[in-house]
Length: 138
Image 1 (cartoon, helix red, strand yellow):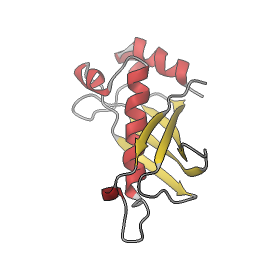
Image 2: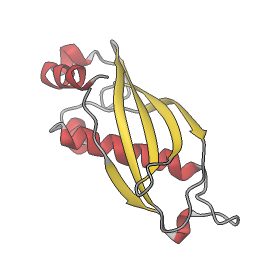
Image 3: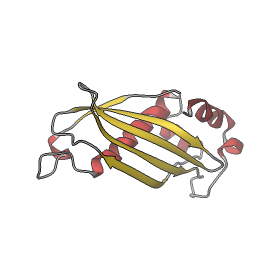
Image 4: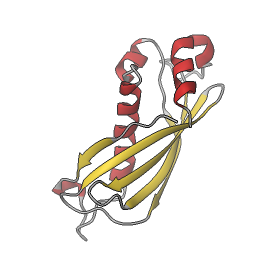
């Protein structure tokens, strides 16, 4: 299994009135991790779109275990867990980088579509990308 780790620092604007990271920011950081994983594979998202392939989110899940707070350095680890005909699923972990405490787990499921959001079989549209995704699958 191949992983990609990305770090982000919690800024003050990411926190809520209780001083902890506002819950929707974790979904944003899933996207950061996903984009960096694709980039590390040689397929930045902009290039995928340029080749007529999009990955709109169709489902997501986030389990909050421990809160992150202002100035924490977080480590985002996405993993490709499933590639089917016209969908791809990734799992995520977000940890506090210095202690490796697990803060959040989750997953996103994406349709594989053309630029008009019509589902496509990636294996037929871009075999090289499909093979690369299969190689990275957990």
